[in-house]
Structures are given as structure tokens and as C-alpha cells.
Length: 398
Image (cartoon, rainbow, N blue to C red; front, side):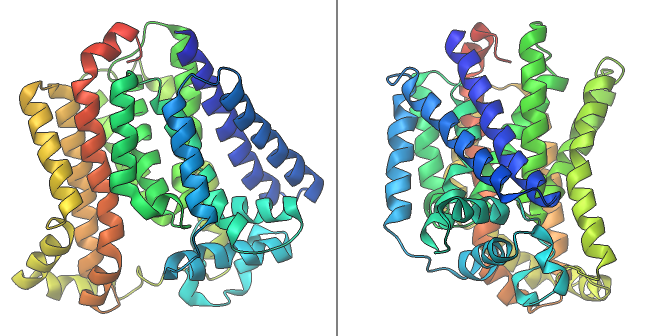
């Protein structure tokens, strides 16, 4: 229990500094605040490493290896170079997340939330110059809070399996400046926290409070990473509230739901800022339905989406693991909860692909492999969690 309390507090601390950085830039705080915040963030990591060095040694070794890989590899993909690090570079030189107001280089999706680029820009600010190495490394640091919190969920052996799943499914996204791996991991931990807070309430009020705060921080982070994060958070809330309604737990969870709903405020403010300055997402435009309706009638489109999303070795592995896990020991409420969330997400993906204003095949070929990582990791993560469910109850984590 002591180790769990420590890891939960470190998760809160690091998440707080990550969000602090975003809000400092949003409110145009002095560079001194940004530097001080990042120094405190690094001190939090040092505390995690050296308070009890042998504790959670798997993650400590894993994270050092990911850092070394990140430092030793160039930025060689379109999204990291032309979107995330490009935004970060603009924020670094202007010292503001509002630099996108000119809508320069619209190919870089100026409407995307700026939490990750802001974090990258501030790391460059701390060192006093721009290059692509350190800002790219900052994306790796964003994985730490959910990876640390996951240690409170699994026993040692299963935590090693969890880290193996992270490396197998997320892969190069851990160290090459992509945001999609962050979406996958933050979504999984956010879904689990929501399930445990609303469906299986912990009798330990102190633990419920700290889990509620972690969920609050994770929800804000998820929504501010990428547009998909907002869609996933909306799906998560809709499913959870409906689940509570049918379980007749709305009244007892009303305060938690209201508190967690406030996590939408930062992303809604960002979207309002973009809207008021005429900055929109190129994939959702006035032609969405005129593109969607004809494509709905073409059966070949469904086959192509199925081919790109489902016929993927990592997705098929995760799906098989999920089926075996829930066949071996089914948690019916968790299964229904996941079925609803993933079903809604897949339905949303189909609609977005079918309504895209760009070439249909190009859109699938360029983005399906990234999107499927969230589906694959969610299936693998909850398959492992389902197998660990009895142990978790004994540890009073759920």
C-alpha cells in the first residue's frame, strides 16, 4: 500500500507540472515560471528514481532505454517534423501557444491542441536554444505519469507484461515525437479510472480522492494532446454516464461526474479560440455529409476500412489476447463497458473516414496505422487487467 501511495502521488505531481506548463503559456507567464516548472518536473522524476531505486526497477530501466533511443534517432516522419515539432518551434520563438492565430502552414493542423508542443517548446526554453533532439525527447517524458500509475494496478510480473505491451504496440511512437501513442496510453488509464470511480467505488475515501484527481489530470491531458483525445473523452463520458444510469448509480456519483466534467473546460476554451480566429480542421468541413452519404452506399469502402484497421498484426494479437482473457475469466460489467466504448469509437472512426474531404484511400493509408494503436492497446491493456482483477481487488486498488 505504501508503494502505491508513493506512485500515485508521483503521478499527480508530474501530471500537475505538465499541465502547469500549458497553463503558464496560455496565460503568458514569464519564461522564469516555465523554467522553474520544468526544473521541478525533473526533480519529481529524480525523486521517483532515487527515493527507492530498486522499486519499480523495470520502468526505470525501460524509460532510460527509451530516452537513449530517442536521443540517438533523428526525426524522420511527417507528423513529428511537420506538425508537432513545427508547432513547438513556433511556440519556442514566439513564447506563446497563440502563435497559430495567423494560420500559417495550414497543412500542419493549426487547430490541434498545443499541450505536447508547448511542453517541447518549454524544454528547449530551459536549455536556451532550439534543436529537434530535446523537444522530441519531451514527448517521451509525457508518458511517465500513466506508466508510473499503471504500477499501482498490476503485480510485478504482470507489470513487466504491461511494459512489453507498451513497447510492442506503441513502438517507435514512444521516442520519435508522435502523439498517437500518448493518446492510446492516456485513454486506457483514463477509461480504467472512470470505471473504478463510477462503477466499482473504492471504500477508501482517501484513495478515491487521489484517483479522482489523477483522473481529472489525465482527462485534461488526453483532451489537449490531439483532436482524437477530445472525441475519446466524449465517448468515455457518454458511455460511463449511461452505464451509471442503467446501474442506478447516477445520484451517488453526481459530484464526481460534475467535477470530472470540468476537465473539458481547457479544450473547449482552445476550440473557442480557434473558432473565433477562423481556424478549423480541414477534415471536418461543410462538405462532410455530402462526402459521407455517397460513400455509405459503397460496400467496397467498408472493406477498405476493415482491411486497414482490422487486418493488422498488432490489432489481431491484441484482439486474440482480449478474447482469451475474457473467455478464461469474464468480468461482465467491464466487458460491457469496453464493448460500448470501443464500439462507439469504431463507429466514429468509420464516420470520419467515410466523410473525409481528402482522398478516401490516401486518408486510410496515411492514418489508419496510427489510429489502430489506440484500439490495439486498449484491447491488450484490458485483457491484462481482466486477468489481474482478483489480485487488484485484494490490493484494494479497484
